[in-house]
Image (cartoon, rainbow, N blue to C red; front, top):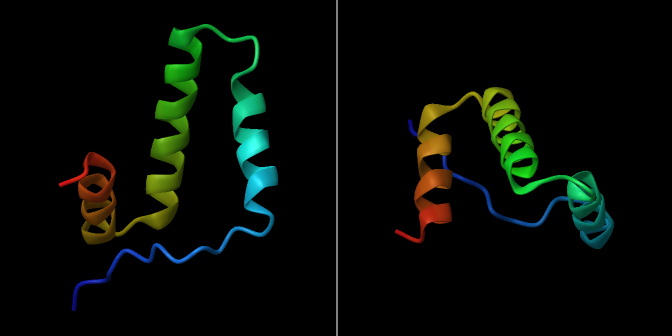
Length: 64
């Protein structure tokens, strides 16, 4: 059985999380921000660990 990507809102105080995410990039170059984003994606992908769900997330992010 394939797991499905769950896009329901689950983050408490999402505006606060978004502000933290933006603050992570403050004062950094584009290259540094890109590297942080790549590391964050890989850490979260590893945490999810389900290739089917990850594939669905990639497709959703690409707009396909």
